[in-house]
Image (cartoon, rainbow, N blue to C red):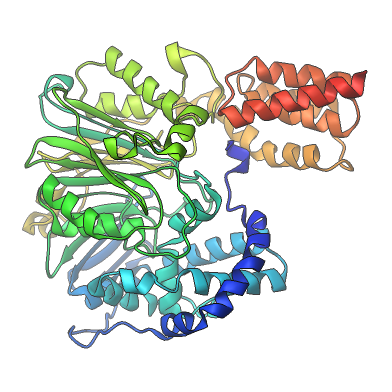
Length: 564
């Protein structure tokens, strides 16, 4: 799926929702139980937070803090029992959380403007999520309940506050399962022994989740000290207690990469809550595997787990039907893109097809190429790997091409040094800004309280010079112009000048998509000679996926027929 089409294309599921309504009526009893469910919070003591506003970007309640650093990343520190964690989180981040909710649901409203279809979607979500509460730990439900007390009343028509907060933790999984969206075309790698400068384990990952520019604006780095379990850090967004990228104080790291899924008939455990459980309760790889194995998930996902105690990393591969663990033998490196590698998936048709047709295998080969050039990685070199924008053999494949390690749309990138308990988190734009360093040994100790800061400024990784280049400015202009060009390509009534099209193509001239969109525009305008020329230019470039290439080739055939 190309960048201009990376959105929650819910329109394409509307027909399926009509059929789902039949099933909904047949299972209405199960729905009633789920929508009336309230978690048991009685076992937990609670002090309603009274937040002190120190300034516009710093808030506190006792030893719980929220502050924004100079790189514009929000840093949150919370502690307590599950219910207290949720309340502390919600009280400190309420403004950010409600804004994030508004961004998400306004996106849905823009894609599904019809009130009838919105009601249909709401009913479908109630049905689809009817088993989720049965598959989420009680302590996590209590935390979600506390967090939900600070969500907006504006969207109660979708679901009550608690259920809506729970549903949002499965949004990634639901989008993945229903659409196979691949909004998360992520890349991660772990290296150790002969592949790092000091022999220690080093992990890097790009989280290429894109739900719009506004969604990515407020990133939150959470430092959580639970009453039970292991303190941990997580990088995500306001209102999220699940983990997509994180490390605990024992040096266990988790990152997730989407795989090829079939569509299940019910939501179960959101993958981000499986990884949250690993961080909070695992100190070794074997403990992480045991946790993942006992949870019922509803999408296919790779979970890369690094471990300071094991000085090793593995990829846990979960899906509704299979469970596998990919371990490397006699090697100090493991890569993870978006296809499965363990024996459990050797005969999985979806995985094999996805490996052939998607950009996952290409990025895997690119990682191998980059590691041959950078044999002894350190955090700075790892950052350069995560920032690499080129194809195999350094080929220019266009900025934003999903075959690149750096697709220039990452929500965040992280680098973990588990044995040293250090983590680096990227800042905007994408993973091009400074990587801010955090020392978990310091943060989860009295040192943080004494110096009042979270990050280690002496270990900051410098901004990528590309962020200040004319090429980057051109790319950002290309992104803004893309929606206009795409709209005109799909609408026969809209006209574009030759100058606008030429300018659009000049902004990202190595990217196949700029020629494809121009070809579609000319085809719909019945200017078939021009369309043919543009489609042929697109075919000469590195096209992202096999289906994308086949689509361009089909347009060429249709254009040739028109020219006869």
